Length: 220
Image 1 (cartoon, rainbow, N blue to C red):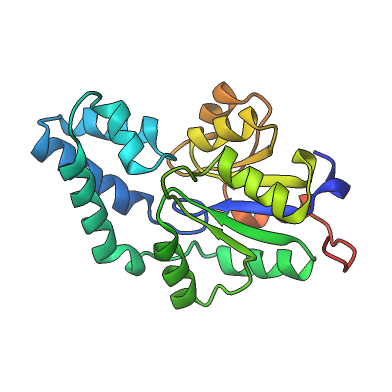
Image 2 (image 1 turned 135 degrees about the vertical axis):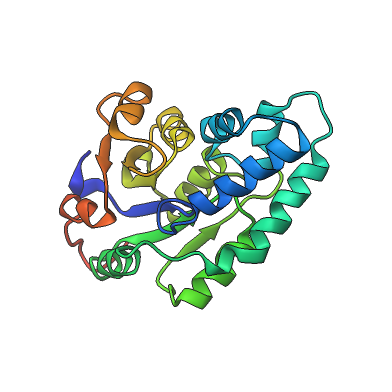
């Protein structure tokens, strides 16, 4: 990574700035065991393997060739019931504020729909992000979001870093030549290393600050 070339930092939402993955995983395990007869271990394993994707796409992998609309709708209903109760990681607000002070553009990229992210950030007082990129058909985390940022701000691949907590986050960044930083949580350093050797991995967002020094004030 060339520190001097970075202009835009794109953050995953669940599991990266919000400590919501245990909550989401418990919902998925509950539904897969009660609706589809998975064992808890099998349900947890499949959910983790596919995390980082919208749940509708996760279910296409977990249970292909089946009408999964009911379980997807139920998952989304359960998420809406309590997603706004999920807490930010303790370092999220301070790190985002500091990076904005250092003149980086900041974005949120998520497999959740945009309105959920927008409402959550408003409740939490996170008003420093330049873009909130959620999921909708034909516009999802990965290539679509990266290309949106590149086009909007006239950036190259080397100007963008993506910070996420899932293996699919790492894979999509690699596929699109975007610099990736993995946050430990559901996956550990060795898991990221197997997918993208040499990936920078942190246990706290505070640990990324030394890699992003203050930029010139033009913020271009």
